[in-house]
Length: 336
Image (cartoon, rainbow, N blue to C red; front, side):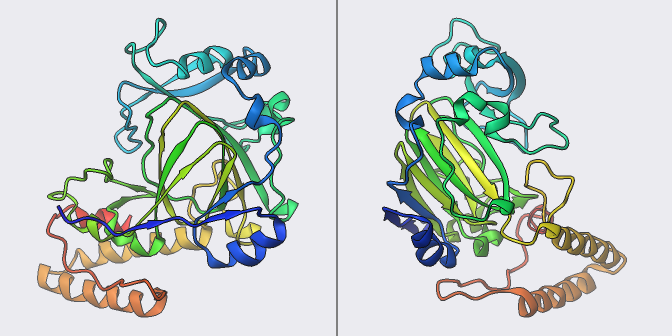
């Protein structure tokens, strides 16, 4: 099988605000930040301590019979558990108490108090635990959007997706593998909205996804206490190598009015981008009125104009106008 190009994510040590803003942030590339003070959470957040501090507050969790969770096809169910019970189960390999099966996997992505309006914030949902975690002051306070608490079972792998805001993934306990793909490789990832349809990135079905091998793969393994800087629009896929606890800190890279104000998750496309995609859909519907050869011709003209107007060619980018897809379903997936 033809292999993807693999690139190691660079590691920076002893990073403070000045180093981050001068040496890391301007490059707009992922970076592992090692040695940043995250507070006493790295030593304190054992299963017992988490359960004691989190108490019986009920949390909504993902539960799956398989370790590769797929958001597009929903191969999991949502359940509710007291936080201390959830932590106990998530840390076990086999369960005496379970919903679906004794080796089911668990995943928590914390939510705001009003899940439809408020972003997650560790200091509000888990104030006692928030005291142990120091948010790195690498951005202005008015840029802050959310701090998302994440806990997952060992071996749990989450789907490849992008976020529209810059974020830091703090790996507090356990080890986690993260694979990332550049926004400039979006055409190779078979997108459906903000998610890739390629679920198994280590052994992809190349008959269904032949272009996937062209995407350059950035790899890193986060140790306890590490931070990973994930710039907006970079695709990422995570695999928990142990039972692990982390915190995602999101902040606004663009002006506040660029984002959808009714988006508590911070994953809706910027307002201008959403408007452009809606316009594109209308244009595609207009092309449907033409015979096939005309659709093909004017579709190629549209692609060429988009490429000339918008593509950014970095030194390592080899983005080209794509050939017509061999799978009839691919074109819609790429454009969505």
